[in-house]
Image (cartoon, rainbow, N blue to C red; front, side, top):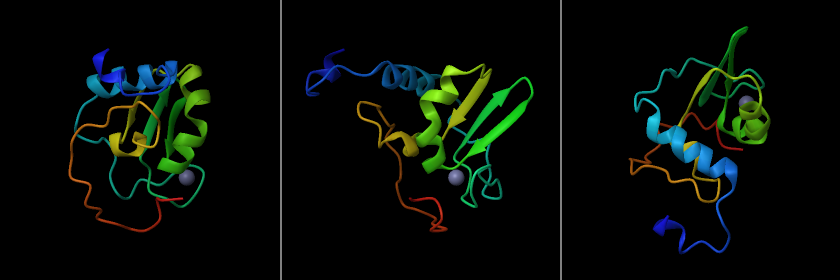
Length: 107
Ligand SMILES: [Zn+2]
Protein backbone atom coordinates (compact mmCIF):
# COMPACT_ATOMS: atom_id res chain seq x y z
CA UNK A 1 0.00 0.00 0.00
CA UNK A 2 3.04 2.27 -0.08
CA UNK A 3 2.03 3.58 -3.47
CA UNK A 4 -1.02 5.24 -1.93
CA UNK A 5 1.11 7.48 0.25
CA UNK A 6 1.11 10.28 -2.29
CA UNK A 7 -2.66 10.26 -2.68
CA UNK A 8 -4.71 12.67 -0.64
CA UNK A 9 -7.59 10.26 -0.06
CA UNK A 10 -7.84 6.50 0.30
CA UNK A 11 -8.48 4.60 -2.89
CA UNK A 12 -12.10 3.97 -3.71
CA UNK A 13 -13.34 0.37 -3.67
CA UNK A 14 -13.80 0.74 -7.41
CA UNK A 15 -10.17 1.71 -7.95
CA UNK A 16 -9.00 -1.21 -5.82
CA UNK A 17 -11.23 -3.59 -7.74
CA UNK A 18 -9.96 -2.27 -11.06
CA UNK A 19 -6.33 -2.52 -10.02
CA UNK A 20 -6.85 -6.18 -9.19
CA UNK A 21 -8.68 -6.78 -12.46
CA UNK A 22 -5.97 -5.08 -14.51
CA UNK A 23 -3.28 -7.21 -12.89
CA UNK A 24 -5.18 -10.37 -13.78
CA UNK A 25 -6.44 -9.59 -17.25
CA UNK A 26 -4.77 -10.70 -20.46
CA UNK A 27 -2.52 -7.94 -21.87
CA UNK A 28 -3.78 -8.78 -25.34
CA UNK A 29 -7.06 -7.09 -26.17
CA UNK A 30 -9.94 -9.37 -27.18
CA UNK A 31 -11.34 -6.39 -29.08
CA UNK A 32 -10.51 -5.23 -32.54
CA UNK A 33 -10.88 -1.83 -34.12
CA UNK A 34 -14.05 -2.84 -35.89
CA UNK A 35 -15.83 -3.52 -32.61
CA UNK A 36 -18.23 -0.66 -31.92
CA UNK A 37 -19.65 0.63 -28.65
CA UNK A 38 -23.22 -0.52 -27.97
CA UNK A 39 -24.20 3.06 -27.09
CA UNK A 40 -22.47 5.20 -29.70
CA UNK A 41 -20.37 4.96 -32.89
CA UNK A 42 -17.10 4.96 -30.94
CA UNK A 43 -14.68 2.06 -30.99
CA UNK A 44 -15.23 -0.39 -28.15
CA UNK A 45 -12.60 -0.23 -25.41
CA UNK A 46 -14.18 -2.70 -23.03
CA UNK A 47 -16.23 -5.88 -23.11
CA UNK A 48 -18.46 -7.09 -20.30
CA UNK A 49 -19.66 -10.65 -20.53
CA UNK A 50 -22.97 -11.77 -19.05
CA UNK A 51 -24.73 -15.08 -19.22
CA UNK A 52 -27.16 -13.49 -21.67
CA UNK A 53 -24.53 -11.92 -23.88
CA UNK A 54 -21.78 -9.37 -24.18
CA UNK A 55 -21.83 -5.60 -23.81
CA UNK A 56 -19.28 -3.51 -25.69
CA UNK A 57 -18.53 0.03 -24.54
CA UNK A 58 -16.24 2.81 -25.68
CA UNK A 59 -14.03 4.51 -23.10
CA UNK A 60 -16.54 7.27 -22.44
CA UNK A 61 -19.53 4.97 -21.93
CA UNK A 62 -17.45 2.43 -20.00
CA UNK A 63 -16.40 5.12 -17.50
CA UNK A 64 -19.91 6.56 -17.33
CA UNK A 65 -21.41 3.18 -16.46
CA UNK A 66 -18.52 1.38 -14.82
CA UNK A 67 -19.73 1.21 -11.23
CA UNK A 68 -23.16 0.05 -12.34
CA UNK A 69 -21.81 -2.53 -14.75
CA UNK A 70 -19.37 -4.01 -12.26
CA UNK A 71 -22.08 -4.15 -9.61
CA UNK A 72 -24.23 -6.32 -11.88
CA UNK A 73 -24.09 -10.03 -12.70
CA UNK A 74 -21.09 -9.68 -14.99
CA UNK A 75 -19.21 -12.96 -15.37
CA UNK A 76 -16.03 -11.53 -16.87
CA UNK A 77 -14.75 -8.38 -18.46
CA UNK A 78 -11.81 -6.84 -20.23
CA UNK A 79 -11.04 -3.11 -20.18
CA UNK A 80 -8.42 -1.24 -22.18
CA UNK A 81 -6.06 -0.17 -19.36
CA UNK A 82 -5.29 3.27 -20.84
CA UNK A 83 -9.01 4.10 -20.61
CA UNK A 84 -8.83 3.79 -16.84
CA UNK A 85 -6.06 6.31 -16.28
CA UNK A 86 -8.78 8.90 -15.78
CA UNK A 87 -9.94 7.16 -12.62
CA UNK A 88 -8.04 8.38 -9.59
CA UNK A 89 -5.78 5.77 -8.04
CA UNK A 90 -5.99 3.23 -10.83
CA UNK A 91 -2.52 2.10 -11.79
CA UNK A 92 -2.22 2.01 -15.53
CA UNK A 93 0.67 -0.14 -16.73
CA UNK A 94 3.50 1.55 -18.59
CA UNK A 95 2.72 1.54 -22.26
CA UNK A 96 3.01 3.41 -25.49
CA UNK A 97 0.37 6.10 -25.48
CA UNK A 98 0.82 6.93 -29.13
CA UNK A 99 -2.63 6.88 -30.58
CA UNK A 100 -3.44 5.14 -33.77
CA UNK A 101 -6.30 7.56 -33.61
CA UNK A 102 -9.71 7.38 -35.15
CA UNK A 103 -10.65 10.51 -33.24
CA UNK A 104 -13.92 8.98 -32.11
CA UNK A 105 -13.13 7.60 -28.71
CA UNK A 106 -12.31 10.67 -26.68
CA UNK A 107 -15.26 12.53 -25.21
ZN1 LIG B 1 -19.88 4.81 -26.52
